[in-house]
Length: 473
Image (cartoon, rainbow, N blue to C red; front, top):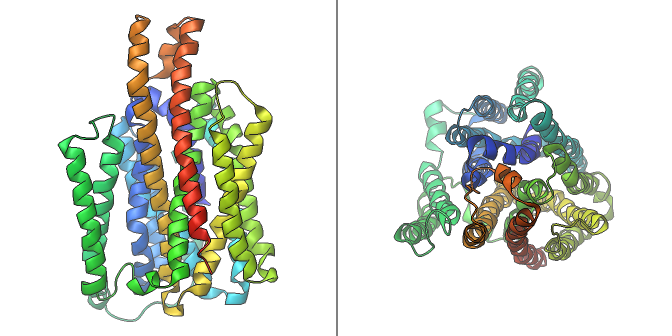
């Protein structure tokens, strides 16, 4: 509940936060910093829980997540907010993963899909109320309550885990357990992701794409990824990402399909509320309502897969994944038609279609990953399929954000100069109120084109996810 709520509650507040801190050009880091750390640390949760036990690792993740949430709520600058979002991500990266791992431990395989369906139902509830709460808090109280709300919910969760969660503890001394951790692989992986993500955010906005720093970071990131593969294959005693899982065709297809699907899913959740607020002038609450058809149908179909479809046999899972990604690809093509003028039927219909596609894929890949993985690797396989979806979200938000900023930086300054308007369009949208109706229309046209270019990027991501899904057997 906490993890999915946090993914959706912040999005409607982003424009308000950016305006308050005068930092529209850096606002993508609110989402990227969380996804960066949650992605980097998520693979460790599966291994840590094997070594130290499920309950201690889950509690540690909860406490770190809550500490970061408190810091976010109290932040006085965008830099502090980004730092504490990163801390929240360290803990948040393990919440959903640990829930799925614990279910695989205590529930028989024939009933596992049903209980994962219950998780999907919880995901449905939190995903629906997330954008609504985020909008209400931002419009009527303060965006800081998007983070304060985690504290009472998380506190109750910690108490329930302490009182009722009883699971076997792994044997061995602390020293023996610490020796089993793949420190080198974890450090190299984190550094590789950071080195690749930074130039994606900076390229075309902070620095030109051909700047030596951008090129150097990409090169270092690629080298570190190669080093990570070498460490996992030749050095690590108990690797974070065992190579044997990647040699299973279905596992590899799931990971790659999840990666590209994550690029689209997180991009929609993060940027569509901004589209409605900037282009349509919607309030934070209204932008949350605009996202409601998407997140609601995602959650409903994710729950339905586990609760009702298991009885139809394994073939239905493969059909759900490939069919879902086909629907998402179609929907992303229509997203490019979203413009200044609203077409309610088209927009709601395509948000529902895209949501159905994502909902069919999210839960199904978890089930298939667990079915096709060796029993000893089930926890790691569960972690990896979620990891690749979230790392896709990291890259998706970074790439689409770079496309959006490039569009603004290229087209908006010349337009403002031609109209003799001086404005910090990366700082706040309030400058629009100083423009005439004709000037505002022309400026919004540039913003709409930047969003259009961003939406175009979703299409190949969704198509690649569909192609990868065809190889799931």
